[in-house]
Structure formats: structure tokens, C-alpha cells
Amino acid sequence: MSGKKVYDISLEDREIKEWRASRRLELRNEYLKELQDPRRSDIVLDKGWLRFYATRVQLEHIFKQTPYNTFLMFAIIGGTLWCAGTNIKRFRDKKEHLFRTGQISYTDRMFKFH
Image (tube, rainbow, N blue to C red; front, side, top):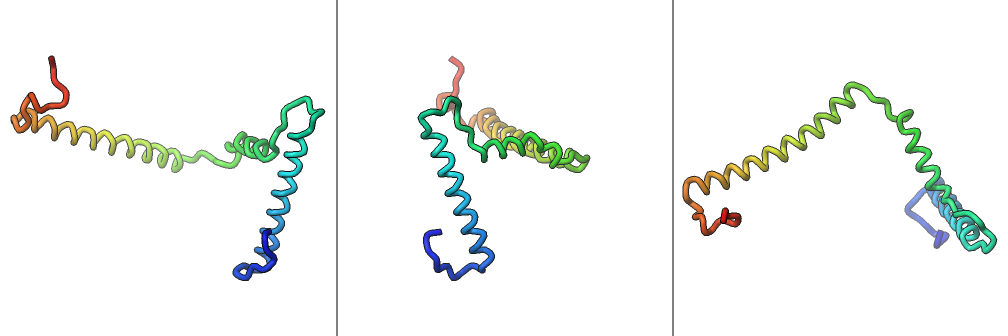
């Protein structure tokens, strides 16, 4: 940490922050040492990314598919598509009404048939 005097956090939080900062510095130095090694023959793998992707592979063990989750997914996706479709249809119907009633002349339309 940059300074020793941090007054707005508890001692436990301060210890956690100091441990994280020291761990981050340790991992950074290890990564830079591996990266700048002139005798290295293979690529340098970041252990954090490896842990992240290993967790992503195991996501099906963490996330259990239930009927409620399936319904929620279909409701969110279907609701979004329905709202978008409704808004597009309403916008197009409004424009079509203006065209058909003659409130917008043919010469003033953006898209014309030539």
C-alpha cells in the first residue's frame, strides 16, 4: 500500500488490502521475470487467465439449469425481441399512415421508387 495511515477502514480490511497488494506485486514480478528471461523457449502463460478459463470450463458445475432459469431466459430474450418488434412496427405504421393519407408528399419522402 502507498501509505501506512489509512483511517477509514478496519484493521482486518487493511490487512486484506495489504495482502492483495503484496500478492499482486509478487505475481507481477514473477510474470516480468518470466517475460524478460533471455533463455525462455516457450510462451509465458498468465496464471490468472488460466484460472479464469478453468473456472469457465467448470461453469456447468456451478450453474444448474432449472425450469425457472429456462423460463427466465426465454422471457428476457423473448420480451426484448417482442418490444423491439413492437416499436419497429409502430414506427413503420405511423410513417405508412402519413404516406397513405398524403400528409407527406412523394417528393418529400426519403426513399423513393425511381
